[in-house]
Length: 171
Image (tube, rainbow, N blue to C red; front, side, top):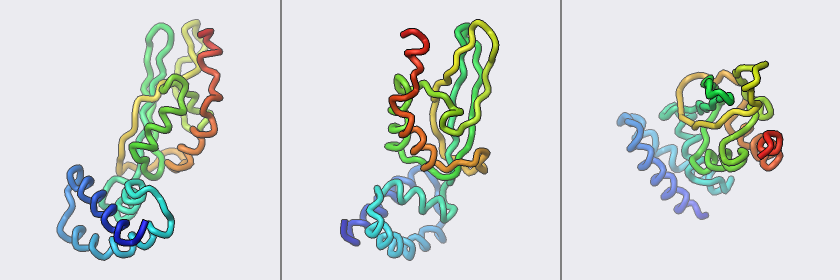
């Protein structure tokens, strides 16, 4: 992608983000300068523009820069415990879909196997070992696990097809 195309892509991303977040005039003015620098960097790295823009806007402090992950423990008796954690950095919608695609049946996973904490009932006849991925949300809250969004994505990629959840359950 040439430099001009990179600038256009970054402007498109900014336009989309400005529908979600209110940017002050000072931030809009700064953006003109940053777009020049970021277009050069985007061209050099070849990253996906939206992911690149989200990361840069978060680093500038204009949008929430971390990701909250929600997941649910539900035992066979339908008792539930909601789990959440916050990782450093953001995930694009495509990366979120990819993480889901790495889960067994698009939702089941073992949090501890990808570095996430888990709270669940244990030692009952209704106990199950897996949790359900609920969703992702950008947040300005501080991370509470020592893991970046990109590291989490890589860990899910490594586990894809190797959870063994449905086989263990007899399905």
